[in-house]
Amino acid sequence: MARGRFISLEGGEGAGKSTQLAALAEALRGRGLTVIVTREPGGSPGAEAIRKLLLEGEETRWNARAEALLFAAARSDHIEKTIQPALDRGEWVLSDRFLDSSLAYQGEAGGLGIEAVRDLHRFGSLDFLPDRTLVLTLDESEGALRARARDGHLGDRIGSRPPSYHAAVDAGFRAMAEKEPERVKLIDASGTPETVTARLLYALGDLLP
Image (cartoon, rainbow, N blue to C red; front, side):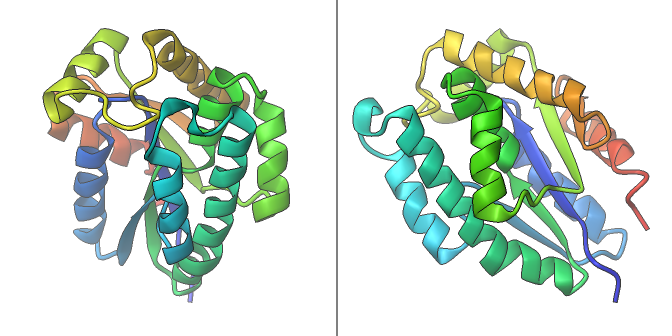
């Protein structure tokens, strides 16, 4: 049995990840693939417990280093309990966020440095990487409007941080796309949902059976 494929979907607040994750999963299933959809932080019982620690509470609950360690611990459990077994069964795994979010949020925007956060991943998850990372990009003001229309506000500890933080997140994603162009692809998230889904599928064309 051929190994499955692991695809992560990334992007800033309001870029449309949830909508596109569902649409992409449906499109891939329409091609005869078995697809599971998961998320970070979370995706396994242990990682879901850590998710609550990360996203709830006051902004000052964790410093940047503690936050990065919690994300790394959740990811290690997620890979071992959910992602790797599915890939071994020949399934495709789509994840709403993965390592590149930690690199952009804690590494770039949080000031820890991308390589420092990557080192945590090398230790916790043996540098396990997606076959392809698709980063939805959107004008900052449009993303904020979409997020507020969706939530009424940017509701969790991380989403509610100031615009300067989210601009740094965007810069982090773009830096990773420049450094790893074969793995990390920037996808224009403007236009109709159907148009964006078509762009995502095109970016996966070389991986599709």
